[in-house]
Length: 348
Image (cartoon, rainbow, N blue to C red):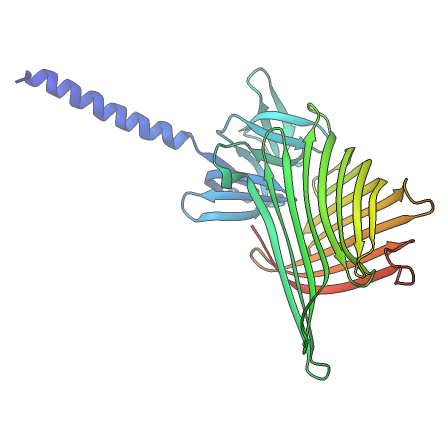
């Protein structure tokens, strides 16, 4: 049997280790500092498009508008921080104990930043679902006099790692009448982006599928490689421009196949988000294509999404779309198609 003093010593060591471990664990928490003086402790998920996703110890997962914060302290050592002067920083954030300022620490240097200099924050963790974010929108309309209904579905999911950002976008617009369901328009796109070093220059790869009955397009399969730059990265505004080379293969609703086509794409993406009077978000995507295989052929795909927050994470949306093809798959079919869709969306 062990002497009592040894047993007591072991118990004291274990108790001290437990207490110290609890205190250390408490320190290893992310902290948000609000402009009104409040403090929130938990785990930072991300900051994107003017919103901070935060898993609070006391209130579960929260979405907080960034303008309500004056700073934060993070514990994870690897954050990707984008600044409004279009720089990438890799490190962690520490409280500066001053109004609207924050320290960035990459392990070798510690410098002060203004809170409003930070455009986005992405933590890199091992858990797969921590790196996911996205939006799902659905709408439905029906007219009794015509017995025709329309269904629209839009969704996008983004997955971010230190070296690669991948986005999946899906949209569907269909009609319902006495003959059944008609797939009028469909788009599926998978895009991956890699930022070069600590700059806003990037390379991208995109693959997509399209269908548009109005333009007599049964399907189009397309693959693109591109390079570009995020030329504006402000607190509430992002502007990305891409160009490169794309190949596609088309088939008309009458079964005519185009063979392999080569085009030069010019892609412009703009995101604007405003959370004060009113809570408004605008996303615009424009893609123009100049054909190298068919002389005089030009195409354009564009969309603008307006979102107003109704209640937390739920939005009323208006989506405007337009498509143009100077030489559509079937001669004599429409060259222009446009539409407006309204619905409800959920962001996660």
